[in-house]
Length: 437
Image (cartoon, rainbow, N blue to C red; front, side):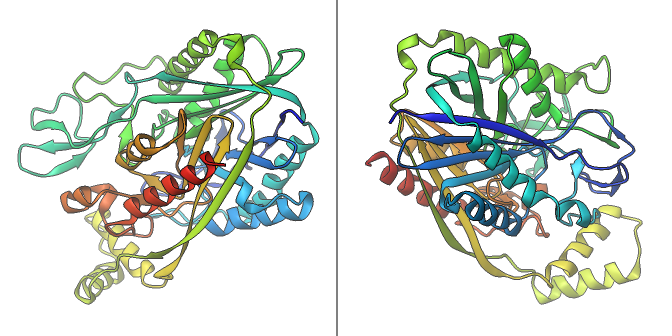
């Protein structure tokens, strides 16, 4: 039997008044710029069914992803091992867990697992004879390492444009844009595009307005360029230390609050369209096979020392917010002490024809994505971050020694040295097993 593909999306736009996550301080939504969706693409090769799901959220907890997969299995019989659920990482969407000073939007959270399952069921119901092709592009103009070496010997996140004290970036980038196109086998009408790029988020000037960020703008732009309607997912990659700010140049001028996210979306969509159009007809195939693997790995959280906890508790309880950042981190250490220190985290990989996909549960530093790609046996490899939940930043050992925001211990920065290496090795082993089948 030849390949079948189906796609669907479900609206998950919140009500006004919800807590928006992504800044240090809590924000309450007072407007909606564009709708949020959970999007699903289902692939069936006649023997196995796999699914790629992506939400217009900053992240979801590990338990929520597991619950959604359990609902999918109950309603369709498809194993949790065969479904990857990721989030785009927009910073203007409801809080799915407590981070810094933002509390979770509990009523909203409870609605999400069923909507994830609904998107998968709808996509499966829409399976049609299909053919797929893979392409890759380059978006180096928009991908920059946000950690910089400074003249004083420190490493700083976002040092500022044209800062004379900033020497050079403290790490690499991965500007590779991976693209998977699915179209109807007979009519050639596009069913879906699943793309992958390591770019944190772009953001806008409306901090209190709900938005899917440049990920939503990308979907609109690609459909506009192609001149047809189809499902579009731009899954985030290993973006833990990557953003779109080029600090070697002056800050860009914006025509309006949403100019930059539209601009970046247009650049990425244009590169997608270019590489899509370069594909030869014979590169589309309906003979692709699909498969997936998932493994739960032990995780041992970093801990603060008793002295650090005592100092943090004293500052937190004093209520002295003269240094708001320090008070916030003191609160984080106190709250972290009440969370589990040991649990399991999922690492998953998938095969869709000649495309290999590794899915990692966190904001992974770009070095680990590059490592996985360099060792993958597949001709095309995506590394999807913030997948099957979010276990926070996963930095390199070098970065943990250097310090700065992505490494400072708190509820969303807990991974010890060796975490990224273990996850990368596991993903590569999975990809090798899938490739050999």
